[in-house]
Length: 445
Image 1 (cartoon, rainbow, N blue to C red):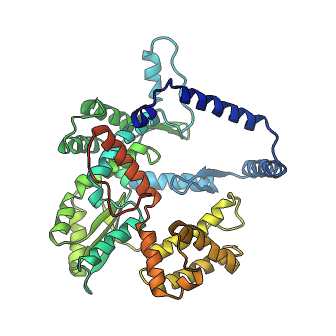
Image 2 (image 1 turned 45 degrees about the horizontal axis):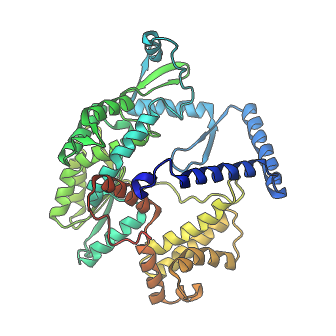
Image 3 (image 1 turned 90 degrees about the vertical axis):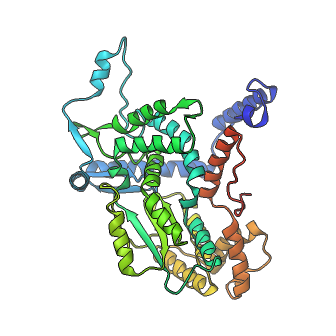
């Protein structure tokens, strides 16, 4: 990386000095005594961990980390088994095997075979999955960015462009559709074929000196050789991919790129907005509700495995209770993130003030003791320090023009998701010596 970006060889004196200083610093930190506060905290956390383990042994509960929000979920073993049965009946995505497929590899291997990986978190094909994701995701980001939604802020910007072009009318509908069980219902062989089509369509016979045939073979290993155990039985997933696999996300996006072509062309012909965030589709339309329902019905016939639903989400907004055992910095981040999101999403001062009061009530309801000073500081720090605003918080919430100025500056600021996508595209452009523009309307500094 240093050699490619800054022409610094790996055996340079600066690199050796930096490595030696890093080792010295690490040893000093490792051998130094902990402070009183760190010692007190570590002891409390050890007691807490032992308490959780003791309570889990006394009950038949299972604790797992969720794949998206990375929080802990606790439930009974019986309930978990019921959910597994319901999911298998609904999707029929896995088939039971008569024996452990790794034994065939052991019997054919010469010499001492490798030990099988026990942990399901780090599956055998995880390394291949990560490598394929690094190869394909920058290409998808680069070629399909016109119809890809990164996050809520990116969608707001698209709606602003839609309004600026005088396309928003009193008859305009804002539609959202959800793709049912995208990861699980992804057809494996067809998805791999579409991956090959995607690469050839954009002129890639090789990706970083790797042939398409090699990429196809590796993708097949990640998808088809996905074997796991449950209740002392072996299963292989025959539909879709693992949700924890990095490559599954990119492959699902590429598959949906192929699926949505008709819908995208139809929206373009009517100058309407279309965007997709993984399995959530957002679009505008000036047609009747009956036409939209017919369009949804037609889209559901594009592929037998891909079904759209337009039902209203039944989930309620959730805030982490203040008395939970999460790290303390989570709670401050929740306040700041909620208020920043409210500013970006609220097009008028009246809407923001309504949302601000709602957030405060929600925080208080979940046990947050929030004095006015702390509440205003939570919003002042990420906004006014970032944009060097001299306007006070009290002035902003009473002056429409000042609020719109702050909101405009915050909307232009790139979000973490946009930074990540821009970095992936820039890396691929740097390798290909291309001059493709990323997004000149967004400030990445």
